[in-house]
Image (tube, rainbow, N blue to C red; front, side, top):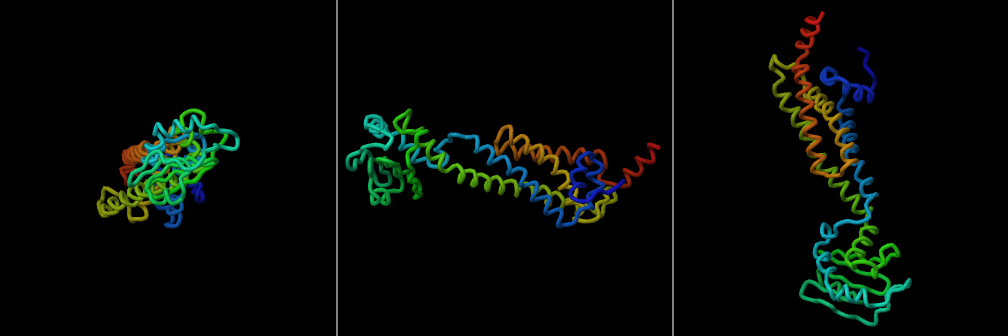
Length: 274
């Protein structure tokens, strides 16, 4: 069998469970690390595409206290009864609508009011301020989500998401990367460790830890491609991780059924088929 150069040999090995096993030792450590990084990139790739198509989000996931304050009926009433034009609102002076030790809601709140509270919502003439857990966002109103149209909470949430979409996408990419990094390392290097422990058994012909890792990384490839496709169709982190691990385990069982992780078994099978 003609051996193709890397990385083509990695992908062509997907075509056969036997080739996944027989080619387990054809990769160097550098190539195995490179493939592992490539597989991580595949599962992260759908994240920016998913957020690019989103126009709104659940603000409670990021600022739960602000999300609650935006439902204040007094704030909604002020936003609807005050005239709003292309140049913004025409609020006159400061107005505090709700305040306690940690929260404040109002109109034209000054910096001191916002700084002295952990959670704050302030409607200004041309902009609004949202503060939750000590993090403040000073954002300008948009024509697309004007605060006097529809529910104020929804309009401000969509404006916040529009301005912070890139940051949210990046943070989600980081989260997905870390989660899949842990699961992939556990599967590729953890499962390989147990195969390596059984290397002296006559039932297996895996001679080194690198061969065991090569087999696991090879098995993880088709499972990761399937996971990426599912993520593009329906983005759900827990679903994606579950699909990847289930597919990888099923493929590992198929490879074992075809090869018994033993080259002598394959040779005996070839002789028996002649």
